[in-house]
Length: 229
Image: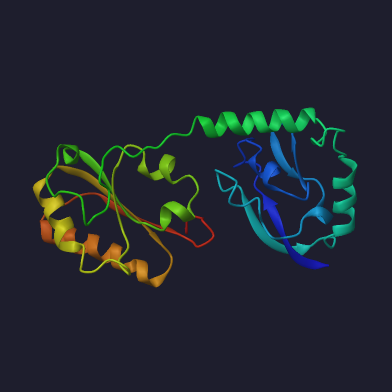
């Protein structure tokens, strides 16, 4: 039958095992250090595994696949009988997978190097702006894109805001920051939704008003947490 089912990009997969842990149906297993959809009939198509993946290696696709077999899933879960004490049975593979996930997540640290980071609150002159690579991001992007700290905040001075919820225009303050400091580059990260164009336009106006020629780029994040090419 034609239905929505997950797709795992093995090249992106880093083998952390978070998706296998997040899959309540047991459709995903770790094989040779990579996540595999081993039971298509166990995949319910709800995508609990998607937000768990730190490298966005999982997506949805619509294709021919066996129907979701809830009865088979329940039977498989029933086989994992609890111990007399009520604890779940010990599974060496599961323990190894959990340990791997813990090791991965424990090593993830915040890359934010300054405070505050809200455009409305940040001062226009601060020592951290000297020779800074500036990141101006819509605040939703950090929630939509799982690896935001590593891919965007790292080695950047970060300014965030929401043009739809915040009152006023960011361009005046951004102009002061760019004009009064030695900014090396500007990266704008926005969502694909129309209201996010406000933060992109504010940066454009600020760059023009500053009178400086600074390398800059715009990266757009989809509501599914992917970079829009």
